[in-house]
Length: 191
Image 1 (cartoon, rainbow, N blue to C red):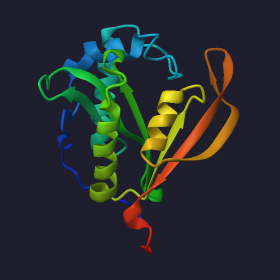
Image 2 (image 1 turned 90 degrees about the vertical axis):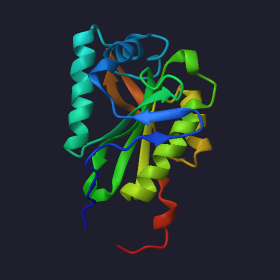
Image 3 (image 1 turned 135 degrees about the vertical axis):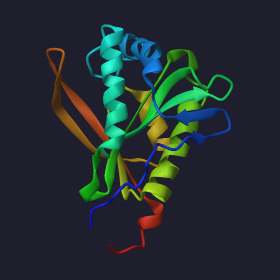
Image 4 (image 1 turned 90 degrees about the horizontal axis):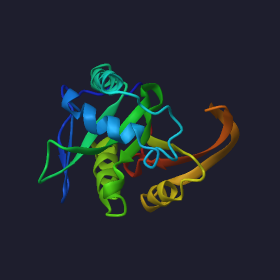
């Protein structure tokens, strides 16, 4: 049985300090700042953005991806500045046939080590399991990214695999570390 995502709009999720909301093209400048920073992108092995147009194009694809049911990605904003995106979090590489999606996240370095990503992850994981009905969530990290590994482990993810030189980026073959989390509500269910 294939999973169906019956959301007409991406719901706003609120936590103690955060508003998790849909992206808009007005997020292009802060998104460019995130995706062009060598510090923030140190362990995200993807090309750096070069200009606002590239940022707008990617944001539009994120917005369109929700309507195509290929992603559920939220902009992270503080409650006292809901219009200012400081990061994003959510699911992409959605495999509806397997009731599985990959989680990803990025946060501006000004907000590191304040528990913001942990707070955001708690909200989106709960939503994905209880409202969307995902059976499992995967995460793929650069093995040198200790902070990301600790965040995943804190949220109950278990290491599932270590792939040697399975990813080619910037002229090098890189390793990947894979983590997974099963939906605790599905443990006793038969499909």
